[in-house]
Image 1: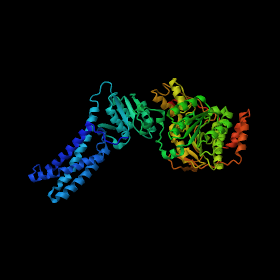
Image 2: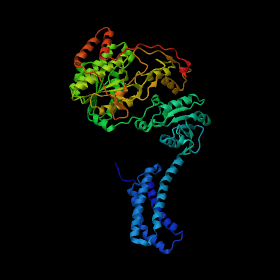
Image 3: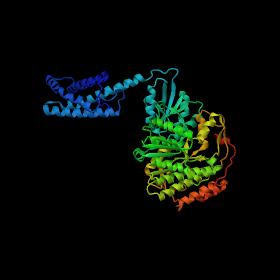
Image 4: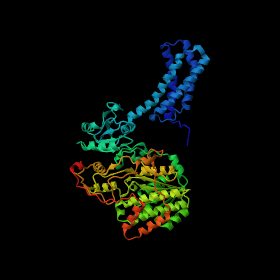
Length: 629
């Protein structure tokens, strides 16, 4: 990477201007000192000491004043100018006083650095001001868009500067809305802060707003919902957009760095996840990582993020051929040195699992393969037990046999006081992993438990969006049903953080924030589509399906959770009973899974997971007008 300065004509012009500024302000300091009446003797002092000013130009180079792009001058440049002028002023004063002693007017030595500082700063920030002024639209054509920014913080100020420079489309930012009362009545680059969200409707009407852009970086779910409600009550119907935060811009393609449409994930009131990247890298870099269920929502995102940490090999295991093809094709475009290995197979195939571990000897095993749809497994109990319980046992046993460093089970909040077959099978899978952790001395067995993944295949969000596209109705199981939600990217980030923290035996619980009412999510999705609930899209209640609960819990007792050291992860102090002969235990459930009557298998699940209490379906009354609004 080149470190030398390329002296373009513009850069040379700035250097010459600095030289003129340093020498010119030196003469000006003398003129000010002697009230613009300099005697001949003092003129001689000027000419005798002028050569010492070369220290300024040397200092300007030493403090990198000529490496900046002047129309991007910032506080960092101001700091460098301060250092350079201070250093050169001290050196010049020391040299002059040493030679001339009492013969030199000391006031000049104080005045000159101040004037030089103002002149050099004026050059750079003047260039920036001129550049900014020239880039601003002088007039707004008939095609301009009136924009109101929500959030008068750093992101809002940055977005305003960006919009002022944009000529196509032409934005007229009329001002800001911010609930911070200390900012009310203030101005940012000439644009007023009108007040809080309570004045939103009035501002929309007064200024004929075309776009409302939310410029809040963190925990913006509540403000997004507030703005949606306000727009619903306004006769003006501006387009609602959101400005991506820095973390999103770093991950997004260039085309997505401008304000975008509000997404369902923006409705979640969650902070940005902070990760210990060095610790995660240490646990994955240059290691063989195996991901089961690699074609699913969690498994595929696990594979994408693991690849970023440069494993020596990434082994993808998936039973669905098409899903495996797509994720392998995607990852092969990013991988180097043929790191990706795809294996089409079922984790219930003990021979395949053993061969896989024998051949690749994975260091880290991320077990995401599972049947997850609650209603399906209520009528396919044998399939759920075979995949979620027996498959977990076979993979965990192979990890112990071939001495993998770590094994992680991806679990679910439905394993807590399970009311469904799916939840019961995942609870038993947790018990299997916990017992392997007691038996193993070389492999760290851990579980990560969390709630629903927003936007996963077959999720409620995907169903709602499809129903809205079809013109409705949206089907909600119950008006009071609530669920925890997290984005898939966030959940996988925390899974990888957990595996880097694992010592063995932990059940890590991801902090999911506040549970979301499904009815509210349905209404907000309708509003985001520019439609009105009940009027444009009907909301129809269908009743809870067999096995479903109104509320989910991440733990049975919050008092048995410990701090993990990470703000988004807790550790459950589990009192899971030890299984003296786990192999016989698995043989028993395997035999029960072959029984033609699924009730036999359900009774076995009750025996293995005593908290399993199958729930009957709940019926609800039709949607009322109050619930619609």
